[in-house]
Structures are given as C-alpha cells and as structure tokens.
Image 1 (cartoon, rainbow, N blue to C red):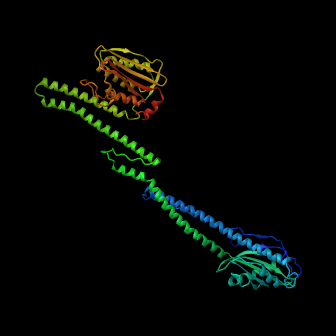
Image 2 (cartoon, helix red, strand yellow):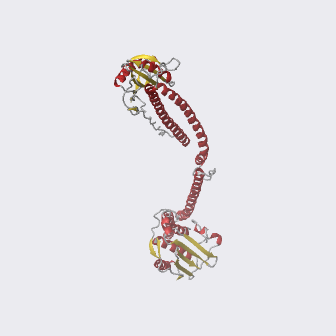
Image 3 (tube, helix red, strand yellow):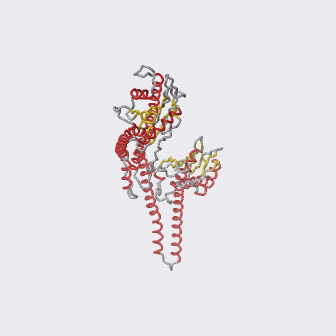
Length: 528
C-alpha cells in the first residue's frame, strides 16, 4: 500500500454496451513505496559523574529501562498501526474503485433497465450505492467540472475543501483522456488526502470521473489520540514501577546500611563489633565475609600489640642492665670499667640476636621468604648432623635417613629451623645425653625431626611453646623466639611442626613438609 503520497493507476476495461470504459488492465497497481519509518528513541544517558547512592542508581536504572521499554513498544506499535491505517485506506479505495468499474461494465440503469448510456446517470447511481467510511468522501466530475456530490446524510463532504476540488478538476480531465484510473495523495492546507480517480467515457464522447477521497490526516489524528492515552497510561506505569522498585530496593539494601553503620563505628582501638547477618543471599555472604575480615584484623592488631609489648619488655631488660651498670661504673677503676664493658657488649649481643630473630619473623610473611629447590633429603640430613655436633657435648646419633628422596624446599631456611631444634635439645638436656636427628618420607610428605632425652614439656605447654617469647623452662637463656621461627619456616613451606614430649623423658620435634604441591601454594602466602 502506498501510504504517503504515491499514485496508483487503475486500469480495467469496461464494455457494457453503448458506454465505453477506459481500456487497460483490470488490476489496481500502486507504484510508490512507503517511506514512513519508525523513529528510533535515543538511549537516555542516565549515568552521571555525580556521586549517587546505590539505591538512587538502581532506581534510576530500573525506571529508565522501564520507560525505554514502554517507549520502544509504544513507538513500534504506533508505526505499525499507522501503516495498517494506510493499508486499510488503500484497500478501501481499491475496493470502491473496483465496485464502480463493475457497475459501469455490468450494471443497468434502474430507470430504463438497460445498460448505462449516460455518464451522468452512472455517476449518480454509483454515489447512491457506495457507502463511504467516516472520514471518506465522494464526488463526481463531468468534462472536468464538478457534477454531483454525495448525499448530505453522510458525515464527510469532499466539496468543503475548495483547494482539493480545484486540484481534482484538471486531474479528472487528464485521467479521462488517458483512460486510466489513479490512486494518489493530494496535500492541501486543510489536510492530506488519499484520492482515487476513476474515469468513464460515454458513447457520445462525454467524459466523467468518480472521485473517492480519504481524509488521511483525520485518520492519523484518531490514531494519535489513542496513543496519547497510551502515553499517559505508560507514564503512570513508570511511576508505579519506580515506587515498587523503591520499596524493594530499600528492603534489599538494609544489610548494606547496617554494614556501613557498623564499619563507621569500627576503629583501630575497637575491632570487636560485628555485623548481624540477615537473610541467606549475596548480601548475607558479604556480611559474613566482612565479619571474617574483622576477625582477622582484630587478631592481627592484637598480635601486633602483643608483639610490641613483648619486644618492649625483652629490650627493656638489657637496656636497664646496661644503664644501671654504666651509672654505677667507676671510670677511674680500670677493672670496673672493663667488667662493665664486657657486660654491656654481652647485653648488646643479646639484643642484636633478638632483633635479628624479629627480622626473620617479619620476613616470614613475605612471598619470597623461602625459595624452594629440589633437594636430596639424605644429604641435607647428614649436613645438619655435622653442623649440630658443635652445639654441645651430646651423644649425637642418626635415627633414620630418607634415601633416594628429593624434596622441594629452601635448604637455608630448613637448615636454620633444624639447627634451632637441635639447639633447643642441647639447652634442655644434660651433657652426654643422647640427641638424635633423623628424616623419612612417604608419597605425600617428608618428616625431619630432632629427639632428645631432656626435661620434656608438660602437656599444657606443648602448643604454647611455639608462641613468641614463651619459655617452657625458666632460667634457660634465649629469646623465646626460636620455636616461633621454626613454625614460621615450616608454614612458609606449606608444612607444620609437631611435638611429642614427656616430662623427665625428653621431647621429639618434627617438621612435616609436603613433597611438592603444597609448597607452591605456601610460597604464594596460602600456607601462612
């Protein structure tokens, strides 16, 4: 259907008798293609550089998407309905034109009962038989001049638009000369019309034409009124969607508000507050994650404060000793000065050892603390035994040896931890007592141990001895960081430290290391 100003020539032969009809094909053909296109709605730019809250952004997004969906649906429906209206107009004009041509060919004059001989009578009868639509009008022309209009009882009258009638007069004459019908669009200041001109010629050469005119603008105006109502309904729907979205989003974001409130009340001095877990959705999981993070932070802060307290206590004692002796020293007495100097150097060496051990503990949290390489466990065991013999006069023995076993480990760090265990065994055992070193391995792990026949550790202290500055036996020199360093080195390799001990019978400390897989994750930090 040509909806926007195209012309269609109607060519159908009429041979009723005396009256000659236009020659040509009987079909109706519209030669102009439709050019109306749907307007593509521009995507609204709802993003802004302003700091909107999450609720505002969600509401804006939902409202904008709902409005866009209704706009696209309404626009598409309007374009399709407008096209349908134009097609209905075209079909109506073609159908009425075909009926008129059939009447001219096969109809009879009701006055004479014979075929039509007079063009004027044919046109009058045609106006009486064709029923126009509400916005459709009819008129006739004879020899290019208005002849007869449709009856007054019909609501729409073509003759009311003088500009249209003036434009039709020469077109009817031209169509009569060509002998072909035409469907076209005529624009006037009053409206836009879709017009069908069907010419006929009588036996005397008198020409006439039936004109059917549809007020296309009025049809489109009725359609636009319907979609104005749709726009109001769509606006109400968007407002309702926004209201419901506000209520739903507000309820969903309550845990976020609680999370923000709790986070604002948490400080470095008070990490004990936790957030109440509400529901079983993603926000509940987020709340649990934040609570877990707070647990870790609280533990880290507590550990840090404890470390500072312990370090301060451990460093304060040698400083106090050195200061006291320096204050009491007689600078004029060489023996007193030399003794004070020796004591001060000894205390400084102890402080230096303590600082070095603290540095090792601080480095144990770094990914590069250990550098694992394939190592022969049997060779490493022999080397550690040889290095441990000078630590004290003990009966050094080899318990077991893991032969043909290669393990990924940092030899320097493992040797350091192993010798620390050997040093502890010497400290807490009697001279000439047995101290044994051994190693073994299976498919998944390697075990490195030191066994002594010393004083042993009470069951309640067996796990506490791995904490910083804890000594199971008072009166023994040491910083209390040795076993803490051993545990840190084992953890950095993805392993653990085990202890078996009986009071008065001795202890066995064992470093358990994974053969391969766990070391890779431990060096990335997971093992710690």
